[in-house]
Length: 267
Image 1: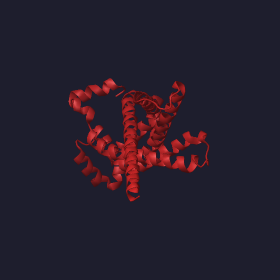
Image 2: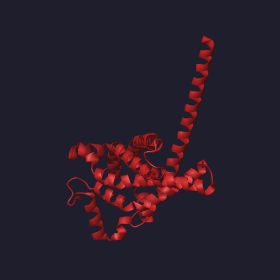
Image 3: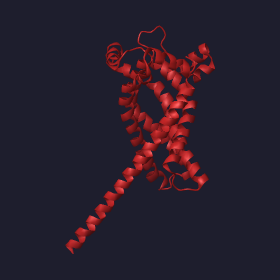
Image 4: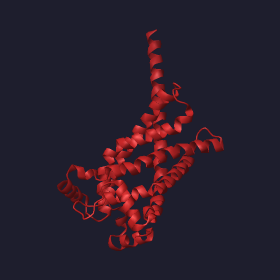
């Protein structure tokens, strides 16, 4: 399939509109906890870096973008343990190797054992570590640039959505070759005649047999779904963070008032 329209036709013909949502169950069960772990790790590392490196002036603020990239890379490595099994099942369901999640779980466990759920683990890291670094790094840099351009300390929710979508679309296109190689590795079944041993072998083989352009196959579909996905992804994160900080502020204020009342009563 060379383009979105070619992929859309057989899906509608043989499976109906639900074909577009094949593998959504494993994807949700993998992405939801993985996303929570990734954001928690990134925010925790960022706060630690601000306190230990920048507030103490051990590092200059000009190095903040590089520190953000490092925090993003570590955050993805932490969440990948949760993410990869769901990704393996989703990819094989979408490739038509298995008809359902139960069959996929049973077959992978029987044929490949626990390690089978981490097929393509290194390829996932090779794709998603640079993706996450670019995604988080560009998003924060785009926000800083926009704040400077429009001379505002805080951006509106709409502006944050725009920056998130822009970061996701650009990052998605640039990392398409990594996604193509990772998908080929994850969708190869145990016992197949030709199995890629590693990420580099897959990329070289694809380029040699199908041409350089094959590395960007599916890039338009990837960008089309990543722009709204990343916009919502970061938008919800920013909104949730503001709500939690506001709630925390109310709790602290309440505790201060209560403490003052207790002190006055004791006097």
